[in-house]
Image (tube, rainbow over all chains, first blue to last red; front, side, top):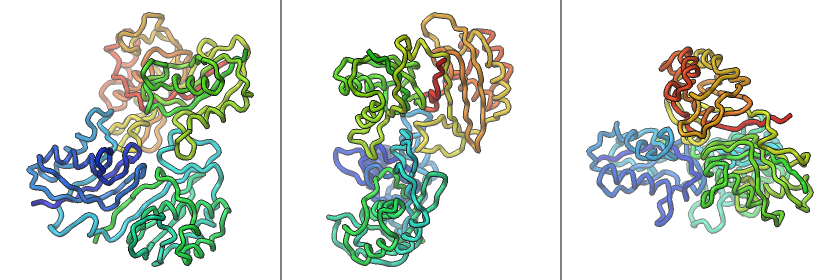
Length: 252
Length: 252
């Protein structure tokens, strides 16, 4: 039996998130449907990150086991053709960037050593109808220097309970953020964060908190206090899903 | 009775085009619905360009008559709030950029002296899932110099019957193209065309023809032959709708 890793990009706009749910159109559900149809097997896919509704991916990973006859090197094209069926220019909402056979013990979720997300923010007085599903549009300018100062308090190993949505399952809330950059490009701000793991909504809450710092609504130091408090109420708002992209998954 | 001009941007992806059609979600239909609800009148809107399904606008114009009580200067905000209802960040698929009272004899369609469209093409081996509704993705590089040479034959007053979709209503097919530019920005190509009027699918057929020139499938001179022939079969394919944007409408 082959153990196959897929590297996947998707536009999350039209999906109820990654994870399969009966009666909902999800990314995982669509990929399983296409794989099951191509292989004639009942394929179950394990994704690295369960992205929420409206969240995008540039490099999601997922693995599955199969006795399929299709050569692995032909799989991405066969899947992309299926996703693009009935679509203009043959480009679907989901694109398989790579399919590769892996050792028997590989698992897209448990073998992952970390992930990088990016978050896109667009600043400007006039909202752009074409960006509404692809970034967080803020009508005011952001102070990127203050955001970077705040980001400095987040990098490292910390108990990030304050950056976890209320009602999340209980577990250890200690994680390591390897890097957290804030880049400004014209009126736009790009946040890039990598770490060994992320709590539920953690990147969106970090972003919302940094945005409040960038707007001058809170000080950079208040972010340190929020982390120390382990209290969700002390952190900022949860930024909307459409600015978030799963950028890369790290393996050994 | 007031005669009001709206300047409108929209993402055409989710609409069956501009023109109202019973049972279909159209841009004109949505705007009329919102205007009728805000004014309590049965508003009928006249748009300058009847854009097709999937075609976008950066500067569509439309006019309507009303006895509305809402001050004109408050209308754009009231409409945008209505379009954005239940949407993230308050940005809908339609955005009113400006609302202005015009003289009694003004009409968005009949008073127009011309229009400019732009057409976005993205060239690259790897299709981009995020651009699939916003440009024409071609996997090969385009020769912009050859496209510009071909464009030179199109500028001016000509019988453009070859650039009109078959089955279009009979009428004069003579139009004046004021300018037609082809700009390259990295792997992308931007076509910008302005003229006093355009036949049905004219910009998309011009684009398809220029793309064939850019791919080396036909010579720049063949475009002159196509115009002279007045034969749709001698021109190139109709480029897909999602790369087309109504950019600006000209009035005196």
